[in-house]
Image (cartoon, rainbow, N blue to C red; front, side):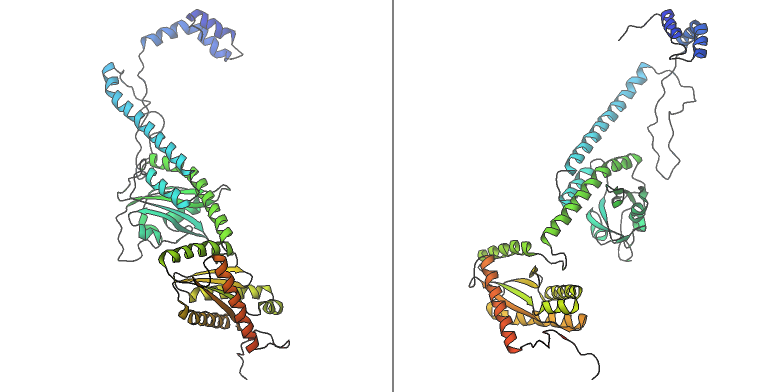
Length: 436
């Protein structure tokens, strides 16, 4: 850097730049009066202006703009007053550093996992260090509603049961308009306090929208507190800073969940697919071996399914597959497992079922399928079911499934011998509903 020029030389440089870097009219006045102006500047002591640090609540007047009391005369600051302000000044610097460090750690942790539940659990812990709250909820938009994806803190059961239509309530308004709300009323959430027996101590809410990559709102991050008007604009600023990174993390996690589900779930019926079946069956066999328990595996096949497709089309065939999937699931216990192996073949895994119970369970499954199909389609649909047991029929997933598959084909063959089907008469029969 150059050393400061004497005043006369400095004015000479300014005069040379007139019309190039500086306005000639201003330079002319300055060249004529610079000695007088310099003397005036030396005689006058100007107190430094102080920035306003006060942020009123949203329910009060608007915050001061610019400098605090810029038009009023201020006394000159003394060394003593500067020393008194030093601790406060240093404290604010330390608080700002702590906030920046906490936000940095939070941003780093948000990208560490593709598990949405794990990510939001970390968020709930670390966000509380910079924004105090008593309850937190993350709602995701699904079919024109906001559904709670993660809830923690006070009244978590109430929040976990909410289904908020877009545009309604506090969070619904935030999602619909893409704008935050500070110090809103939590009780306006649809369904939150509809029951007179419910009571909440929460009095304030701070909610911000979560925007997707394409600009659409994918959800809402909401914080709740027991005190009124407790959230400040600083809290809002922090939450908005977090929401941008959180939005991307949530969107990536949701896509990962969808991709993972599509890899393990049958798209048509919503049941686990063959890949999921093998993984689950291996786990169940290991558990049965440890406990010396029994395990039954049943393979179910829809009789004459090809004829249904040929006569009624694939849409009707798809409907039959969905009905069979729902029927098998309905007829099973809570711990049982139903999967679609492929085509018109389903597999049911029944932990703890002994050999003497298997025939009864087979008849229950067949009856449930037939009754549901008759009510929903008007067709008589039957299934052939074969069963295999652990440990007597095999000890691995492949051997158990092979044995159950062979038993199913034996049952199908026996059924055909008992009720032969002629070319003129299909295996499935429409139920006669008209009066004869």
